[in-house]
Amino acid sequence: MQEAATDIGPSDLVPLDQERVVIERLQAGDRSAFATLYSWYGDRLYRQAILPRLGNREAAEDVLRDTFRVALEKIQTFTSTDRSIYFWLRRIAINKTIDAHRKRQRQQRLKDKVRAEPAEVLHAAPPRPDRGLEVQDLKEQVETSLSRLNERYARVLRLRLLEERSREECAELLDVKLGTLDVLLHRACKAFRKVFPP
Amino acid sequence: MTTEEQQAESLARWLEDPSKPPPPELDPEVVEAILCLKPELAPAPQVSVDEILASVTEGPLAAPPSALATEPEIAPENLPEPANTAARPAPWTRWAMGGGAAALLSAAIIVLVIVPALQPSADYAPPSTRSETGMELTPSRDEAEQRPLFAEDGDFDLEELSEAEPPAPRAPQDPAASVLPDSVPSKHTDDRLSATAKRDAPAPAQARPEPEPAPIAPAPRPQARSEANAPPAGSRAATASSSSPPLGGSGMVGSGSGRGSLDAVEAEIEEEAEAVSSPISRSRLGTRGQSRRERQAETTAAPPRERSRETLDSDAGAEAAAPSAEPAMDVDEPEITLEEPSGDDTPDPLTYLIRDARPRGPISTVATAPYEKFTQGDTAGALAASEGELRKAGLSALDQADLLWVKGQALASLGRRAEAEASLREALRLRNP
Image 1 (cartoon, rainbow over the protein chains, first blue to last red):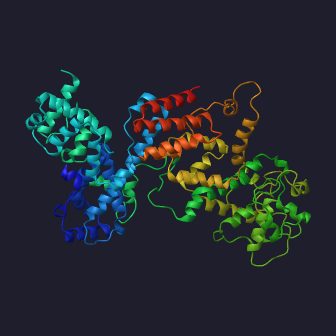
Image 2 (image 1 turned 135 degrees about the horizontal axis):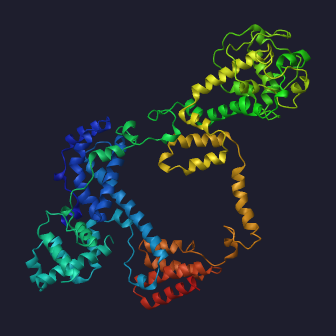
Image 3 (image 1 turned 180 degrees about the vertical axis):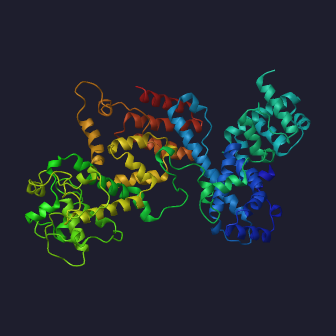
C-alpha cells in the first residue's frame, strides 16, 4: 500500500541524462525511441498512478493508452529540467483518470435520474467528487475510504493487504477461523470498492 | 458451500499466490478493490507500443498517412476509378472536387444536352441567319458582368462559365469564325460565347455574312450536341430565324460568326471538366439526373464508414453551390405543425408538445445547482440550495420534484433519514401525480 500511496521514489527513476537522450530523439520524430520510454514508465504509470485511482483494468488501460498518446503529441512542449519526465507523464495520467471519473459520474448521474427511488437513495453511497483526486494524495483517499467502512472491515483490509500479514496471523489477531477471515476479507473488499475513491 | 464462501476461498488462494492472474470467478468489485490497494498484483497492461504510436495524430511522432488510412475512405461503388486518398489535394483541387466542378459540369450538361433536348428543333436558328438579320450578337461587358449565371430564359450563361476558370490556351481558329456581327442584340448562349471569342480576338472586325461557312469541327458532331446550341423557343433569335434551314442543315455547325468560338469554348469546357473531374465528381455525373434530395438520401443511406471525408467535403460543396430555401423550410415546417394541429385528430409529430402539459421527463434546470453541490460532496450546501430554491414561487411540479429529490438525498447523506424519506416521497408524488 505504501508504494501505491507514495507513488514512485527518485531512486526508481532512470538517470536524467539517459532520459534526455530518449526525449531528444522523440522530439526529433524518432518513433523507435518510444519503446524505451514506455518500457521505463508504462508499467509504473499503470500500476502506481492509474490503476489505483480507477480500479478497473480496462479503464486503466484506456487511460494509459491515452496518456502516452497525449504525451507523444505534446512532446515538443516538454522541456528537460532537473526532474524526470515521469512526473510529467504522471500529471497527464492523473488528469486522464479525472476525465474518466467525470465520464463515469455523468453516466451514473443519468442512471440515477432515471431510476431514482427512495429506498435506493437512502442506501446509496455518498457522492464521489472526482475533484478530490486532483488535490488529495492517494494515501489520504485510501484512509478516507477505510474510515467510512465498518471497523472490522477496515481492520482486516489493513492487516491483510496494507500490512501484508499472513492469513493465520490475521485470523489470530481478529480472533476468527481462517474460513471466516476469508469471507470477512471478501466482504470488506466489496464494501471498500463501493466507497473508493471517496 | 455458498457462492460467497467459494469466492472468499478463491480470493484467499489468489492472495497466497499473487503471481497468478485473478481467478475469473471472483467478483469484479473484489478484484478492483484488491488492485486499488495492491496494484502490484495487477497483470501487465495490454497496451502495445505500436498501438499507442498508431494513435498519435499530431506532433513529430504522428503516424504516417499510410498507417492512418487503414480503410478505404470512399465506398467502392462511388469510385469508377481508384482514388488518390493518401495525399491531401491542393486547395483548388478541393474546390474542384467539391461544389465548384460539380456545379460547372452540371451547368455545362444542362446547357449542352438537357435544355436543347427539351426544345423543338424547329426553333433552331443558325447564327449565320441571325447575322443576316443584323441583330446585335455582342452584349456589352457591363451587361455580361451583371447577368446572373442563369439567364432569364433559363439558359446557362456560358460566358460566366468561361470566365469562372481561366481558359486553356486556345487552338488557332479560322479568322472568319472570330468575326462577329455587332448589330444583333441577343442574350443567347451562342451569342455570349461569340462575345467572349470576340473579346479574345486581336482586333475587332466588321461582321460579314457567310452563306456557306466551312465547318470548323473536323469530326461530325452528334445531333444532341448540335441541339445543345439551339436558342430557346421564343427567343429573339429563334423568332428571327423562321426561314432558317432545318436542324442539321448546312448552317448548323461552324456557321461563321459564333459557331467556331462556341466549339472552341465547348472543347475547353470538356477539357477543363476532364482535368478537374475527380472520381467523385465523375461519379456525380452518373447521378446528375437525380434530384438533390434523392442524392442526399442515397448518401445518407450509405453506411457511415463508407462516407469518407472527401465525400463529406464534396457534399458540403454541393450544398454551398446549390442555394436552397430548405433551411428556412426546416424551421417553418415544425412551426406550422405546432400552430396548426392536424384536423383529422391524428397527432402530428410535434403537437403533443402543445397538447400534453404534463412533464414528460426529468428536464428540470432549477435543480442543477443544488445537484452539482451534492455531487461535489457539499451535502450541506446542496441541502441549503435546494431548500432555497424550493422557497421560490412559480416552480413547476417537475422542478419541485427534482429539488425535493436532491434535498432528500442530501438529508439521507446527513443521516436525517425520516426527513429524507418524507422529502423523497413528496418528490415521487409530484413526479407521478
